[in-house]
Image (cartoon, rainbow, N blue to C red; front, side, top):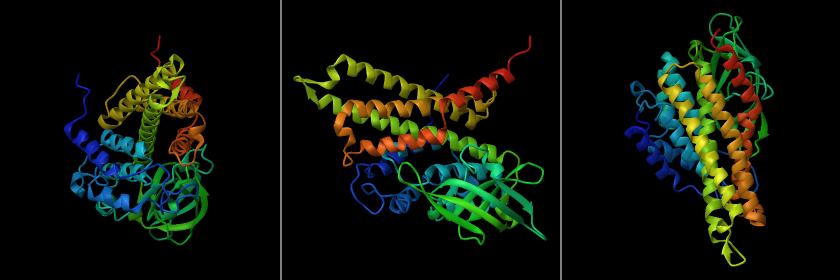
Length: 378
């Protein structure tokens, strides 16, 4: 069996690497990346470069002017984004494009070309009311008098909501089915409460008070929200892999040149053992991510649903990225606490990704439930 990436997937990763080569996460003050304060906007210049390189249209279907690539290509690009801490909603845009290409119908045909050209900034409300409940249960969707829909509810911690043109909001209809509302940020009834993430990105609590949407702004195709939710999960794991890779590379470079007792730190056995442990973590994060992305892309069947692969990927991503930055801080010593050095930014991102993915124990419990539910009968 050939496990190599296709030429198109490799080309996407190389294009992303070229675009992100100009992004510096080292804390140099700028309107977007500054020492300490919260970033008040996405990196608009980077967003334009991503659009010019056709990376925003990567997962847009070919019939809508995109490349029509799938979750694996998206995760390859997101890994590159994670390595440089790119402040753009690339995860949300790419996952939304994939979901709309499959389930969007006429609505997707209207939205996707603008999304692919970078003219539309999209985010997704996926955290529910508290971050611990199902996102679709936090908003109620009901038919409006005459035509259209009315959305009521609240979603918390919506990434870059104050900067987005469109917020994809999962909701439940009267029959308990999940639907997706494409809510313009400036629609009457939409109120944004400022929130700040651990890594300094601008979030918002999005409150919907009788927000009216027309039929073309609501996607009620079966499977649309589960598909989007799964893509967001895989993409978050890819960002974690990128962050962990960059942190381990930084640590390797530092311990190779920093000397104690006349020898580089990297030559000490205790340091080498910790570095080896983190290498194992990265390889496990990588293997489980690509397994999950492959299941999402191919729809291949197995003894367990794709949710099992996603649970395993989340376990390794959540634990692995945390251990990577903890080891990096330990081996950097006091230098790692210098806010003029990039490691503190990576630590904040790693913590944000760990919180977004949730605790490994919860995913292990979910995996156990799946194993029990699909155990062969005696």
